[in-house]
Length: 86
Image (cartoon, rainbow, N blue to C red; front, side):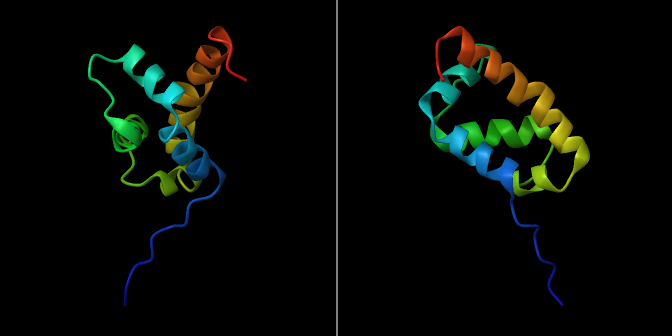
């Protein structure tokens, strides 16, 4: 019997999309001392902040979702507004 990993939903898609966007990676670099090396570095940042092994868990773990909202989604939205991103 194999254990299936949960499939990602809207939050996983959003996290994946942001990981591939340069403005998100710029924001990550602006809030931490370590440089963000490409999309994989951004994805690793999201996983570390949210305490998950996979972005798909964001859609299935309430604590991870709360961390994503509090530490990533809301601060990144403020950053985007401050630099004029829509």
